[in-house]
Image: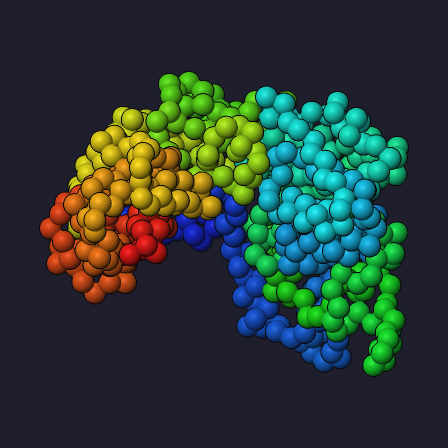
Length: 406
Length: 142
């Protein structure tokens, strides 16, 4: 059983008051999560005790830091159940990973008349790279629609999946509605036609087990900062056959066999795709974040967060004038809602006055907002330091705001 | 933020956001301005009717948060009876009013409570774009 109040003590941000002298109630974890002391220490220790480059230098402290860096790759490999460390590439975050796969994997494989499938619920980061590439190539971007519940229209997927489709990209969880997608179902259908599937796991990695072999996806990306780790670091999982077949994801130092002035050859494996000095502090911080999550247990985290999410959903649904958007079969710990007569930005400003951090806006999902026929929503997204008391406080302030504004 | 401005924010902005006296399309407008914030989706169309060098009528339509709506409503009211030339210093004053780095107190800039309420944006820099959305479009015109 998770003791969130005790876990919260490990997060120094909560040891202070807001400028108005209030406790901080942080409900914007879908945007980014706070950092436990162990992550902050891993970053700080690297800069103060072990600073050096990795994989290139034959001196202390580089030797020790290189070992620590490699341990994180092993840790991530186990964390997402990748078949081998040769399939886990460090990058600078989810957006970086998506753009690199669009540019390096898909661009040379996409021609005029081909099709790419993505969904109606994507964050702009998992829409724009594919959309712009399709425009450039004269290819078609097919959109898998959502149903009124917010769930993907899985039955339409098989219809969309014709012989011209070269690639499928979708999110594990809708960042705006918290709809959890059936990734295995999508991958199994695409697999029958040998179409590669790309998963954006940024919104699922902190609360849901990621098992790339069980999902059977070709690519999967996530960011460190969404799982209690630092910003500026991310992970790209790709099947080895694709990593070996692709040109380097970015050119730079550390990726070559031999360089001549007019031509070069590149090494195999993940080193081929990690040009330049990596975000070493970020990778070490990510390692600490994953150890932190493992120390609690992903299964326990998931059960705990779903319990508070159900509680929040019930409380919000009990309120007059509040509408929770979407009612999916599987809900992630993210809920979007609208309050009658009150603009989400005004609501979030009022909540801020009470020390509650909540997100208002289109959540970088404008096509989804259009589908829902709302300009913006208010979104709460939970992490392991949140409690039912946070939800009670939210509901109380929502009622006050409602009385004042509408 | 001092208590007076906080109180003005709570009273005047909400009242002005709900004030429909200057809402609606203006036929025969001489100037039509589009104010759009792609970050949040707030969108207003501002109609201005210039007769001679004076603005005889101004109105707006669109949707957005209370702050952007109130500021657009207040702007519409301020426009009437003034020339575009006369609006220029007022627009400049408004931007100073919401500027959190300003060394001038809000009260030294204006005694108009409808305008003064927006000095609250100094406290919420992330809401400054809401307060200045329509004023920024007008600035291009004047």
